[in-house]
Image 1 (spheres, one colour):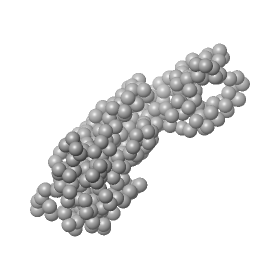
Image 2 (cartoon, one colour; image 1 turned 60 degrees about the horizontal axis):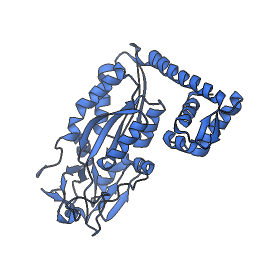
Image 3 (cartoon, one colour; image 1 turned 90 degrees about the vertical axis):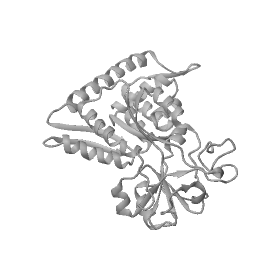
Image 4 (tube, helix red, strand yellow; image 1 turned 90 degrees about the horizontal axis):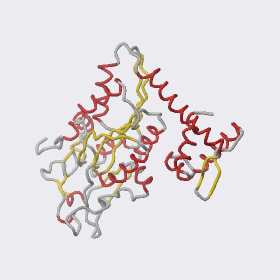
Length: 336
């Protein structure tokens, strides 16, 4: 018997459905059914039975679930007491997107708070749904997730169902990043029409769209390279002088090291749909004209019932201080 399996059966009771619980837990239905069956074999009685109302606890299962919930709460309190507030140690489990300002904040946080302390830090760069899963399962105490504004309503509904609190860290408009040798690198005013002859490099995290059963943000321009590991993006753009990508504002050090420029891109008449706005899915409109990606949000999430520790609050304060750099005007100007 392990703690995760206890959390699994608690979610099944809440969902009244193994299929529904599996979706909420981000695991497959067969694996969840197997874990419950193995737990029932171990304890010697059935926890659930199927009825017209769905999956419901048996009499003994109901008693077991009360004790399981108590055990999970006690474990969380014990974990908090033993590992979070030790003055001689620094413990932190976080999930974040690939973001230069978060790297900067993390380094600043360690420089200020880690001296002379024993470190136990899990710093994981993950996609949105992996981060939500880890926070739900308490394998991460908090996470920063990144999403397009087109998913905002669905995402906040999901977070509410999972009893996760959220705080906006920053909002930003993606910039067009390209090699200094790109034909448009010296252009003072960049428009969507100008980019139609270039190759767009996409490195989008589609896990949220897949989970919500919504179409992922499609390519914005006709020629596309889909990059499934975003860490290689600066190097690719540096060498592929006909390509560009829409990214969060990059640190000046990255632009300099890879000989890149980043620019704001404005829509033109052909980049608008018949209502004067972007295509609803972010991609080319019905006439094949290019559209620009929407705004992005970086959001802090953590369990609603959690009390953030001094260490976690110190890290978040470093992130908040670093975040304005991503929201400011970091685009290249003529002559840069």
